[in-house]
Length: 153
Image: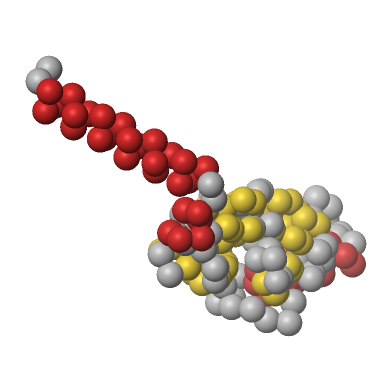
C-alpha cells in the first residue's frame, strides 16, 4: 500500500471512531431524531365466547407522533360504541358478536412511513354454530338468529 492509501485509511478509521463515539455519547439520538417505525406488541389470535369482551393488543414505537389504526379483513375499521381503539393502540370490543369475526391488523404510521402488523384472527365461539339437537334450546335459537342476521350485508 502506498503512503496515500495508508493515510486515507487512517482518516477513514478516525471518522469511524468519531461516529462510534458520537453515537455512544447519546448526541446522535437528539440530533438525528430519526427512528424506524416498528411494533413492540403485535396482535395475536383470539377465540372469544359470544358476548365476551375482546382486547387485541398493538403498540408501536418510533418518532412521535405515531398513529395507530385497525383493519378487519383488509378494510379500515370504524370505531363505534362497542368497538374502540384505546389510548395505547389496542383494540377493545365490549361484546363479541359473529360480525366481529375476521382477520385483524394494526397499521402504525408516522411522518417517516407506515408499517402493518402481523395478521391475527378473531374467532367468536358459539357464533353460527348449528344446534346439535332437533329441538334447540332458547340460547341456541338466539345464536342462530344472530348468525342469520350477521350474514346479511
